[in-house]
Image (cartoon, rainbow, N blue to C red; front, side, top):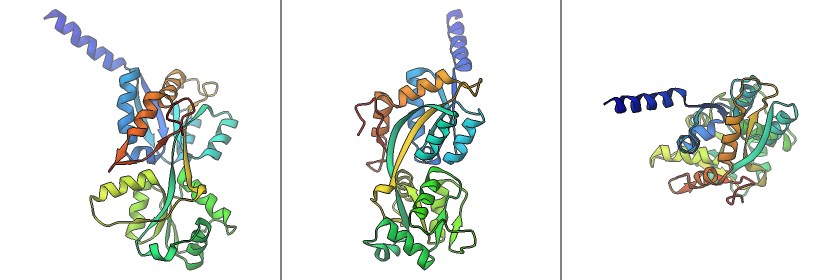
Length: 274
């Protein structure tokens, strides 16, 4: 009996003192369910419990800058590179990628058929097609802004009645686009999750895809321990090594919805790199 009590106490002690790693990440890694799969496997392999908050990349990076988390999993390469240069993040590594797609009511399929990405966005502006933007400095929003700028006309303003900002995550933004029969830009992984949630019901469809400019790369990095004395740098590095290693990359590759891969692993130190 005494052995059983001591054993139970040992389990409780382990649970109480289990190391917890705090991460800030994008809504797409959370909305798709990817982290619900990765976190238990990471804990099983390392003993570290992963806790995360999912926000737009801009807000995720701010949480790191404010020393509120120890590791970041985000998808806005140019912003991340500047973040590292400023000394906020360290040990940045590629993890995976998918791509962005423009989605909308099936009505737009024929209208936008055969148009290049540049022509699609020019058509949207010229014809004042309803468009829902994240408007939250997320990786998706940053990509959308870059596309608007690339066509030479600049980002639509709040005075443009056809252009609205949701200020919300990707699944919520897709829902708003659906309700307003509007177009929006989303990562493919979240779109696949959206389709799965419809359970066979009709919804938005992809109206434009495949342009090289729509590639969507995710990276992981640690918060700089030289700036944040309370950061769990060792825990962050364990997560970075795990998610870019064989087990993490295999878990990403095997994560599917309706038989479709949502992300392609591309860590440099993994045989799964493409």
